[in-house]
Image 1 (tube, rainbow, N blue to C red):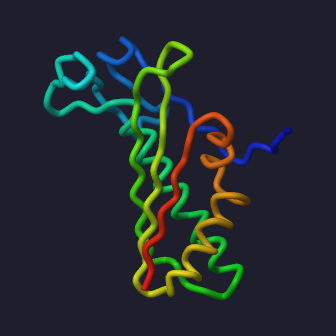
Image 2 (cartoon, rainbow, N blue to C red):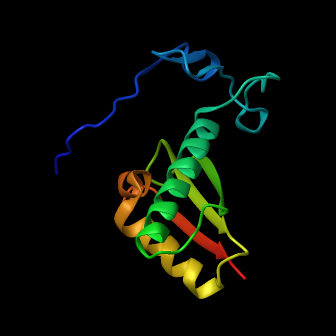
Length: 144
């Protein structure tokens, strides 16, 4: 598979999970620390790679949902997407991720929202494409 890049985001992390990460254009700059639940210091005012991934996936999926809805002459601009990213040890060794996407839009009937979300997940969202077959993703929809 190949793509024709339209935009490239570049960031550098120094110090790993207890360091600092910053986008090349300085649009994002965060201090990182390992959460207490993972045996780290969990320093206040810091974040984790999982928080960053969750924020990015939620925003990207919301855009994909809006795109699919617009193609079908529907409006999903009011939808909220909550992405939960969990990390833990894998049976095969090392660590792995799992994701839960919760899509809410009370302005759309449940069945319609579910269909739009599934299409966004299967056909449009690049985060969904990247995780497919690598990271378990649970998709939950809550419409009217």
